[in-house]
Image 1: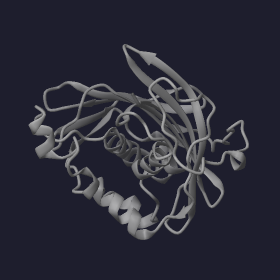
Image 2: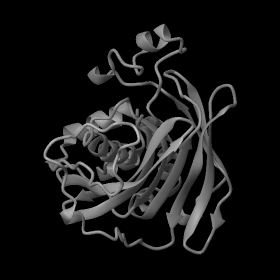
Image 3: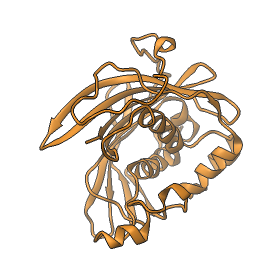
Length: 270
């Protein structure tokens, strides 16, 4: 039984950033990062998230794509060419979920991220609490100053069809070779989160580059190429801490009109 998968467990990941054109000239470019005093390009948190999800896929396979959950908080930078160890502790059962605490260590033994991976005993029913069909994006992305992002504002959403080419590029970016993706054709969990995050972040003109701090995920159904997708949600919370401004986004990823995943993400935006 997949829900009895053996824990503790761990996997090793060599992080290698893909050569996407939009990284050129940014902190995700090795040359730029080194010129600013970093040892290599900084890896976006979404990629660290995607690598953590590999531990869940190895343990629970398709079950996790249908009723899995995950949380992650990003504590230290991860750099291009880093070697990471993703460790899942012994399972705990709260009656609704089997849960393994997860720690991600870099080559120096430092904790760069921590959280958990989980598997629900039964399929979960999404309950957004708001009519997602009414959450329409603004006609254009408005500029927002630090501390002025409005709570309750709807998130940007682009309606589009997810192509096989999109999925292939994403799998390559994650260096993903687990047979589940080839056999089933489902979309990588890391790609789902990146798509939702991209929708949210493209809905505003932020005063600075956003930084992913924390995320929670619940999967309800797998997503496949060819489906019509969009993200719907709202700004759930904003706050300031040590001079930095944060927002919490409540996001629902829809495939052919059905909720496939929920993301609750915290980011620094100014």
